[in-house]
Length: 115
Image 1 (cartoon, one colour):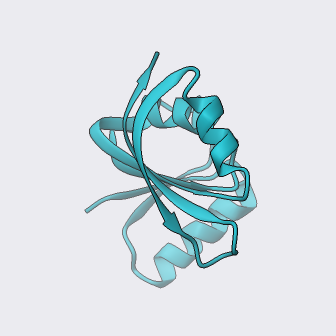
Image 2: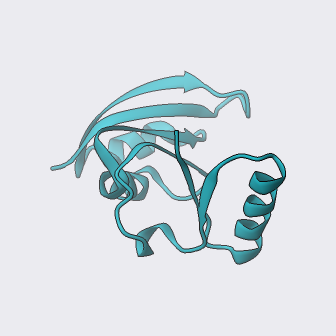
């Protein structure tokens, strides 16, 4: 299993490298913005507090493999973000309660296609 972490903040990227090295976890840390790197062809991508769902779907479409899935943590406005996203995207999703807050959810999204 391979892990690639994308973090544009250089200090945070270095922290991730240090933790991975100290824990002997084999990861690649890319210190760039997600939109500035070549497609990753990932089986799974995850993001927390990065962007609204329509933009996250854009990143997911670019970086996921054909059968890949995205895991996004979203807050109280998740219904509005899903509705807005369905104006330009088609996707399947499952919604799970989050432990981070009463209104928070975790979305498992697949089959992402631009309309």
